[in-house]
Structures are given as C-alpha cells and as structure tokens.
Image (cartoon, rainbow, N blue to C red; front, side, top):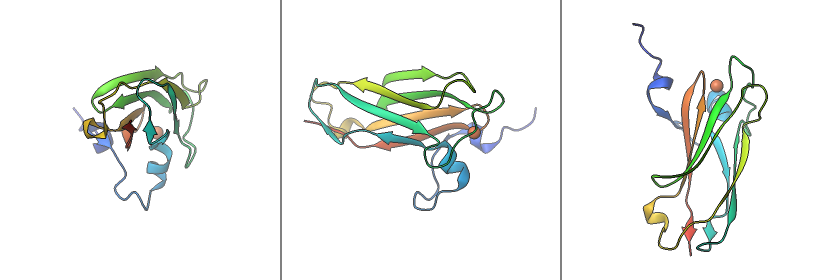
Length: 127
Ligand SMILES: [Fe+2]
C-alpha cells in the first residue's frame, strides 16, 4: 500500500502565518466572528475557505465540509457539494455563560478532498 501524503495524515495549519504559501491561502478557513459576546445571545460566525486565494470548486477537487467547534465541543457542520456550493457559510451561534476562552476559542476545520483537513482558530470571550 502506498504511503499517504503528509497532508492527509494530519490537521494542517500554516507553517508561518505571516508568510502563507499559495496552498495555505487556498485552504485556510478564514473566521469572521466577534471576539467578545454575551452569554445566550445569538451571534454570527462566517467561515470562508479560499478568501485569501480562491480554491478550486470542481467535482474532482473541492471543499467537502466545514465544521465549527468551541474548544472541543462541536457546534455545527456543513457538507458541501463540489462545484455547486461555495465554501462560505454563516452559522448563528449562542454560547452559555462560563465558557470563557480558557475552555478554548472558536475552532474551524475544513476538509478538501485532495489536500486534507485544515484548522483555524480564533479566541472568543463569553461575557
Ligand atoms: Fe484543495
């Protein structure tokens, strides 16, 4: 059995966030969300894959899914149909009190059918 490429054996993150490669720009989920929210009040989290550099969106190569976590708790997941759905989604979320950033910020995982899983994080404080 052939060895899997490294991209498919790990959760990928940029090696140098200040100097992204084209591959990283195409796959890094960009999170747009407030950094402070009120407990129990809905807010929006938009995730855009390919915002920095457009990712292909073809049946043979596309973003398959986007998942949103708060720390280790999964909040939402969408599955995308290649070529027919753009990898940009907005979730409406409300978080309970006492889930401060010490329990983990927002985490997003996206999966490309050719280049594996990529993660972005963003701190959030629930006040
Ligand atoms: Fe890809």
